[in-house]
Amino acid sequence: MSAAGLVSAALLGAASGVSVAEGASPAPGGRPSPAVRLQYHVAQNLALEAGDAIWFSLDGMPPGWDKVEVTSPALHEPIPLTPLKKGSTQSVQVDAPGTDHRVRSGLRAGTYPVTATSHGRTIATAQLKVAAENSAQIYRFVIGSRDASPGRGTPASLRPGSDVRVVLTDLRAAPGEDSLTVTSPIFKGPLRIKTDSADDPGCKCDDPGTVYAGHGQLRGDVPNGRYTVTVVSHHGQQTTKQHVTIAGQPVTIAGQPVADGGGPSWAVTGGVAATGLALASGGAFAVRRRRSRKVARST
Image 1 (cartoon, helix red, strand yellow):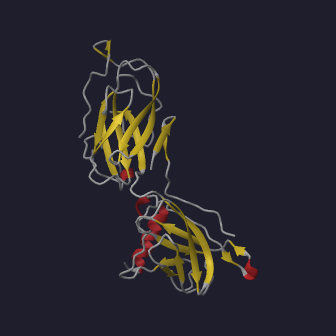
Image 2 (spheres, helix red, strand yellow):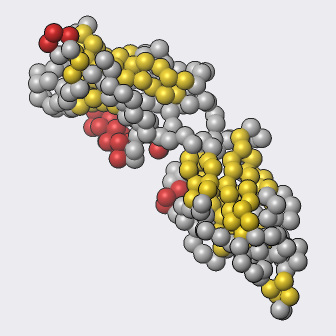
Image 3 (spheres, helix red, strand yellow):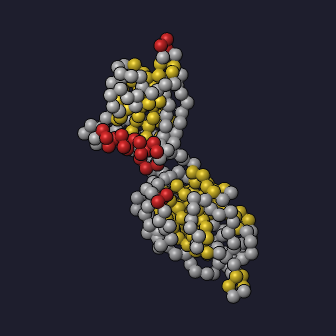
């Protein structure tokens, strides 16, 4: 990859809220200085996992610097950085042919030290937070009225017996998994959502991940209250939960309440677009694993 391509990749990652780690540069007398910032970046708004490609950058370097080497027990090999341009305080990563600038495969989840050195002198340190390999990273998990555009959060409440659409986006979907099982007391039984579904909203916000979608009908006799909706993914190894509130009068057909959710069965026809465990509450959900990481300055 060319230097220009590397710069573009790093800046794109930063714009997406990539992982950030701050280091400290020793000042005269050995006192730490906060001037130098060491950052790491990963692609596609993902949490950092073993095996991922990684980019580093420096900001706040002194005039006249020429090269820096980034090392860590989490990396396959040292990664060189050079000035973005002559006299620049920022860096670009040098990815020469044959280099392997990835987090080591098979690495255990945890925090690993990173050191940036220039001519044998440590100029910044940071920590890499590495997530478990091959785990889900749920970007969104929403349940809403079928005739409404699904947003990032679940509506404040849904009526018993109403038609709903479920959308889940996994940024690290398991290979070969094209459908997921959804369970909840608000449904008549276990339901499935699928990729390549007509219920996929086709939202750019889902790029780049795998979208699972489907629609169905809530039970008409479910009492008002707050319920858990659960999706099992990654071939049974990952569980994601959402909460939904049921409130209001049941939907009626010909003046009669829908007694048992006996309307149309779930359609399982979504699409592939844009991974983590999500837990929703109060009409919105929070992703447990976040892409951006920030550590305290070293001393």
